[in-house]
Image (cartoon, rainbow, N blue to C red):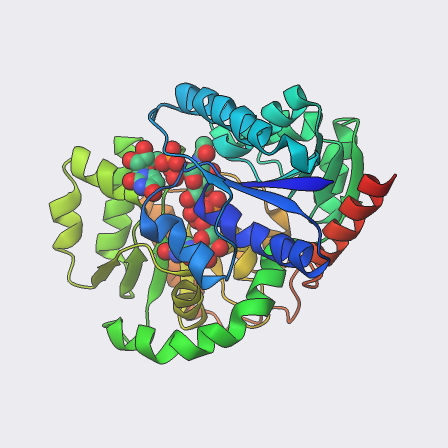
Length: 366
Ligand code: UD1
Ligand code: UDP
């Protein structure tokens, strides 16, 4: 009897790593599939290698880039890939988060009659512009076991009357930071030698509703240009492409106090977080990692909503939108304040992977 674990993008590899490690530890047979939604080395394979994950049993090269066609193509390929390994008796599919990969995986599991375990269930931004909000709602409503990271996520699920079982586990990203933090120390000196500034804001920006909108991207460029503190910006390939398409690339390159970097490996990126003065981002995962006691950084969320209210409630994050006047005022404010952040993360105690695998095993044996 086996479990199918599906990943396809950068954050899924990172957040599934603790679950995969736990499955390995318990000696459970699992089929590991990478859909190829992210395909550049620095967006996918670097994480499999750094985090010591097995080579996927199956990985795809996708022909379609448009969301609907890509989701359909992933479903067709996932059905074939699982079928190829049917003799291993797959019973459950484990999926994580809210990307198109996960929507494709969830629907495929449903059609194949596999149980679905959803890691990081119950997040809601209530922002219907976001493809992630569509995906997470659909996935949560077809899942059998829903692993909510927090009580707030559990409440969201209960309010929507999902029919699967809900468990509060913590977020696996906290497990990941715990597990790999020694490696962060190992690369820290090397990473900091590359950084041009002693004190900097770490910036990431890639959400579709932000970077696919030229007005937002222009405002974002203005924020970078006017920032009172130097900026280190590991750039997502989607954002690089859009900046080039909208004619903003040269302007970005000419900002003297801005250092552009390619997408970073996980240890390198955590080292950048740890040594930053603060973080400005529209990423989901960064809002969680910033609350880890070993990182503990304030975050300005460059969005109008968040599905991680815990980071805001506990004083780590502030949702500031993308209006340059507002963001720059918030930046000034935060730089002038003496901040006291909590010593505990609201996203769990680092044992989410163990809890998830315990439940998986108990349901497979039932
Ligand atoms: C996806 C997820 C998003 C997640 C993000 C993590 C969806 C709807 N979105 O967004 O929730 O936060 O991953 O980073 O699933 N590209 C490359 N090389 C790569 C990957 C992407 O060049 O390895 C470029 C391509 O031009 C591609 C574009 O980025 O078309 C967008 O990639 P895609 O996977 O569709 O969405 P992300 O923006 O990465
Ligand atoms: N990350 C990384 N290198 C980078 C940028 C991010 O390793 O250059 C990690 C980060 O630590 C976090 C995850 O990737 O664990 C977040 O991914 P992303 O922001 O792309 O997606 P989201 O969390 O918004 O879905």
